Image (cartoon, rainbow, N blue to C red; front, side, top):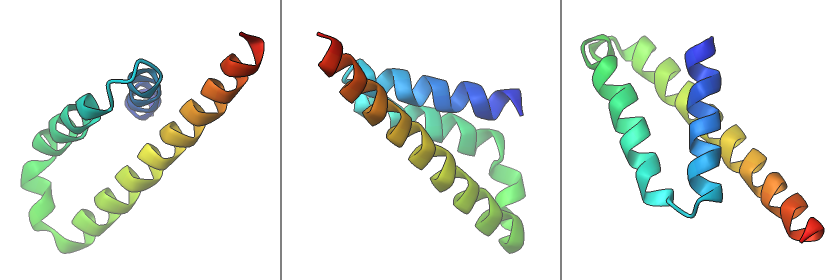
Length: 73
């Protein structure tokens, strides 16, 4: 699950860098890699739910990190 960890770190870094629009590129690249598998409805639901949870974890992590950095500065 190294790819998932890298995905969350990249999304969090993009949020901290105020490059939120680039998050769409990360998700698009992930979707292109799995495009053929999305024909399977069960896999598509699993994939979309997993992606949503992964992005949510990254966003929450970035917000916590941003708040922590703001208190230090």
